[in-house]
Length: 496
Ligand code: ADP
Image (cartoon, rainbow, N blue to C red; front, side):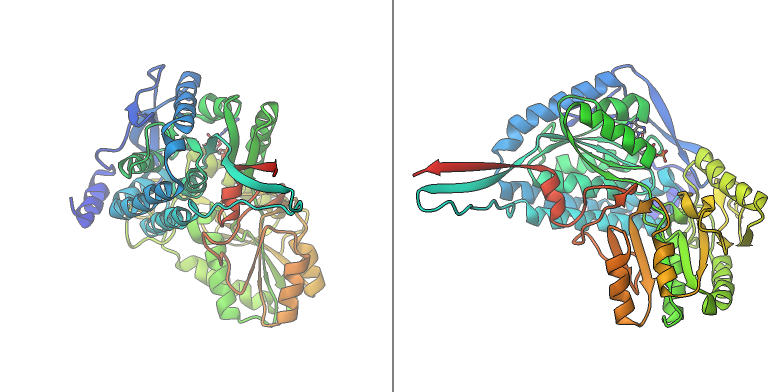
């Protein structure tokens, strides 16, 4: 079927034929040991579009055992450069199957097709990038003098677990699985129960690219039945988790019992600072993108606007106008540039934050309510929302809403802007818009964040390390540094 035809068919039927229904374990589709199935809902229409295996502890045990066997067998014997070839063939296959992946992502997650196509392109790039890293994972030598030869080897840690959220299902799977495989590890992936499809398709593509059986397994199901069992499994050596801070703490506790290492990419409440000297047109474009991309369901969303008082009123007026021009609707429609909220449960959570804001008398400059696709009257949507002039200790400033809700903090000067930027328990990313180089550098120095964006929110790509401080997480993904999370350093010292 041509790509165009695939999209038209999916728009018509509200489904994509031929989606996987089972786990991918040991190189093959496999039904749940307990026989259970679950449904995946299309957030754009609030109706089920596919069903998939509801895994349990038995499925996890089978997948981990197969990953362990593969890591000690076939995958270990393959040269690092061959591992790289598998990853680059996977990148090509992701591009070849790009439209199918993008449509599956829209139906599972509610995002727009253009956002999903961007995610697919990013996932392919990620495999290309780590393909090149597979044969460059060099050790070091240590200067003990002429009587010793001392060097280190970066060995794969072993079986790695990848627990994936529902907001960027394919991208998050790609960015953790690719470096793990480049390092020589094997993987068991647990996609979010709302969005299992693209991880399953990816596992099949990896297999088609020549990945030996058992190297990458995907077990679908709930966080309680599959995620928690996987995190607690004694044969898992490293867990990469992206999701809420509360669940991340549970995962870290489970890992501690097995002395497994973790990479945790958790919540955020990231500030986007606009100073009076900034290019305000540029800042406006970026403030809009930072909070309304993916309907705000981004851990690194710019969910707080910190703005100098002298430009505040005019900027908010323009921001509200822009928010009103967003075209909300089902993600498969190419006219739409603002998609759905992933689940009814999450929509209720976002709504409750705004109910609270209204009850506390906050100024809601635009939006503030749950709604539906204006074309069909269906789906789980939330209006693009700006809560103006919020107090620093207000829940809309302090807590992650994970929706299209921007909290505005007004400040009198640059020093107060830095204090406002640092006023939450989170420290994932921070943006600033200014023409003053000195202020940009001082901000980068003084803000607590894993990454700082100056004059372009979300600047950076797979090359740039990404992760959070404090309640936003531990460890870094992306970049070459990510490969190190999947390695254990062995030093060898020989008396010559
Ligand atoms: P949300 O609350 O937004 O669904 P979570 O952080 O709970 O976000 O979910 C992120 C991922 O973690 C999902 O794949 C989910 O199934 C999984 N998960 C949920 N609870 C646990 C748990 N106790 N242990 C491991 N994984 C879990």
